[in-house]
Amino acid sequence: MTRIIALFILLIPGCLAALGIKLMRDMIFGVLQPPFPNLWIQFIGGLLFFVIGLAFIGGFILHRDRKRNKVQARFKQKR
Image (cartoon, rainbow, N blue to C red; front, side, top):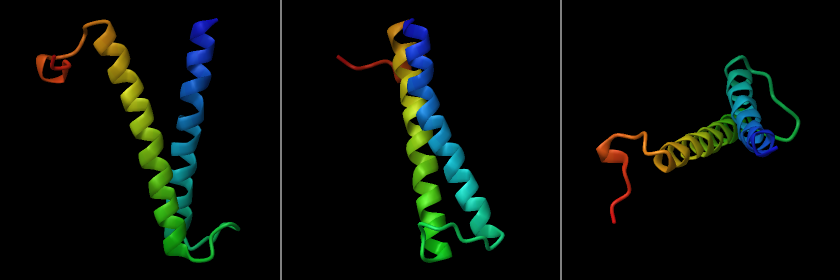
């Protein structure tokens, strides 16, 4: 049951990152999505979505690997 919950927790930021990639791609091709008034604001929003989603997933994996002691010495927490 906890693995399913963890999957759903990772699925939301993953979808957010995918939406960010889509918004940036649409800006390159000149397709303006409804909530954004300008293309450059759409690109910045997409970049923000992508960075937040990727940072959450990366932090989740780093936290899990630190807990299992599977990281290099430079990534271990200093006490």
